[in-house]
Image 1 (cartoon, one colour):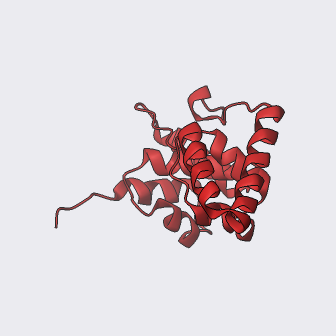
Image 2: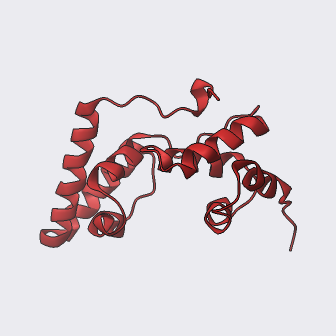
Image 3: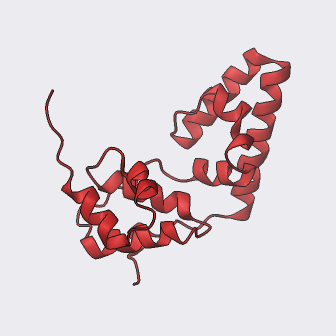
Length: 147
């Protein structure tokens, strides 16, 4: 299924990605040598990307992702909410995530932003053998409740 442009990862210039990679590495080094300067650099990075990164994100990013994955995440908006999302589009987003496409982190972020289930990423991993349709149906069944 073709997805609307609203659901596709936005194009990214190689130069922008390289700049963000360099800045992530610079901040990681500053954390070791000049923690005060690192705090200022992190604040600038947060303002530039619109994301809530903390020192630990830079110090230990390599434990969970590559430098390029970190930079790609930073270059994209934090939330991709689309008002008129269809069930079929959600199924396709789940399908693209499950095939471990290079942009799977992006598709998981779109999914999180567009379904009410607060643990949709856990749901995807726990229902790993389920079809995209089953995962979407389970995610859409969720109804928040007041405590």
